[in-house]
Length: 309
Image (cartoon, rainbow, N blue to C red; front, side):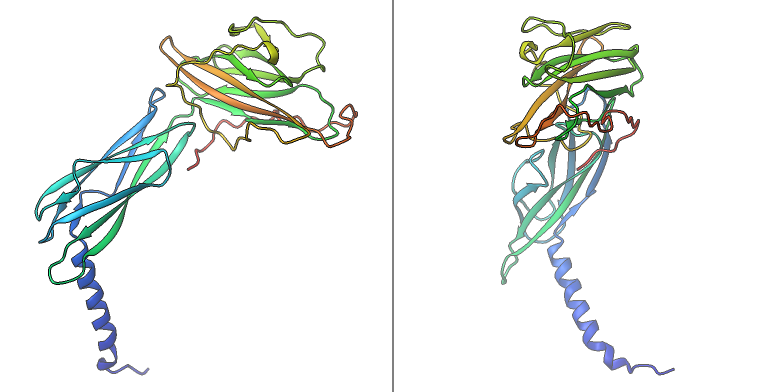
């Protein structure tokens, strides 16, 4: 076995030493932690994080800017420039929106160190925010569709409650005139079925005046025609649980689309809103009264669903 001569390693050692010195010069802000994990409750609409740091260098360091990984993350600074030995903190906020499950977001912090007798040294560091957002209402599927040639017959959406207490589900609003929504309680406060029916294919639909919601209890069924659906929604504090990709609300030519909003009531004080998209895809010149049928897209029910970033 042959060994290299020691002097052959000297160039590599010199390069590594220079890189190490450069890195130590840039590491003026020392962070107590760069990752914080939390678990949210059903009522939480956002999570707040506090990242603390100290300027361990010998010159002032300025935080030039911060950037979130998406519009749902924001950062707030006490000030921008920190003297040698001075400590500070960044308060970051992650607003959940319609997300659910395990989420991970980042705030990138950009700094500049005014090194004496040399060009300013700039660097960036990523702060990671993790949170597990509860998913108390599981809806399968969130997107219901009829393909060209399908018989326009009702389809079922399964709704399962994964919460320690019963949750009352009701249809709050239907946007679009192509679908009617009918909800039925299967197990009190724990399981429901939502029937979506293309307009004109059902024998009878109950009529409800505008601004009246339907409330469901055991062994009781209510239906709202889309053209007479309630326009009432809970206040702007409500959020939706994201359980899969949702289509845009503006249909392309040759397609009918409706948006069904469900309200989930957790006790007397808190309500969350969930959205389902229904699409009737019509091929130009096609006759959708064909007897061909497809698999019911609402037949499957998954009791677990991870959130997406």
